Length: 332
Image (cartoon, rainbow, N blue to C red):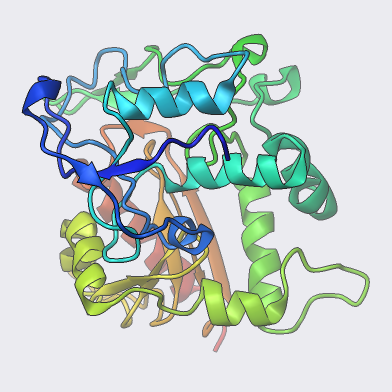
């Protein structure tokens, strides 16, 4: 892609650019690096923001209609001579802009917008009618508002600040890591499709959106080195500790992988929870999901609240309680 400038290796992005120490990256960034989040691309970290204000980052910035991908990448660069990387591509794991850049690569390779490509290859075949990058009237009338838990008294209040570009006429850069809108039912439809594909129980008239071999050997197969595994476990932090997971890995499907059965306690009990080999992840607004192939269970929890996990531990405890109830209701 001509829009992608040469990356530079830097672990921080301080305000004073003249104080930044950087060098050209040696390794070539590949599509596999983007899929496994080993590209070096990362979300800049800093002090915990005031969640009761507009969120200001590359996702919320005005977009470049003439050059959407280039404008987005300019926002990532923040004045640096290249895209900042936390490490050499392929040498570690970091949560960051990988899905967004991968989306731009798909658009370049297919000649289609990410909306059209995903609509033709995923949404329409699965009947996901309330999933899109654009806030259509059909989606808007069913959209759940966002809430914010105030730290002073832990009471929820409506959160009506700028989070991303909602105006379809001003949305030009379709970011694979942030902008997709969906319903819990649509998301569960996707997860059930993958679950049934994994167990080879798809109806004969349903065409899989991915091959079973790729699903099993890539999406559900650990892809990280021991060193990189420590990085994802560091990001998951209290979630790994709370769930007593035995650690986590990462596959090629944008999801973490449980290395052991989850053993979190819920209100003094130890409910049955997702099993080793389950794929899972969560979103910024405390939306979460998991697929447990060994048990044959997939679940979605969409909360629409800030602050995000792991800052709001109540969300984690609530999700565990609901998951325990789900497994309790299974017929042996």
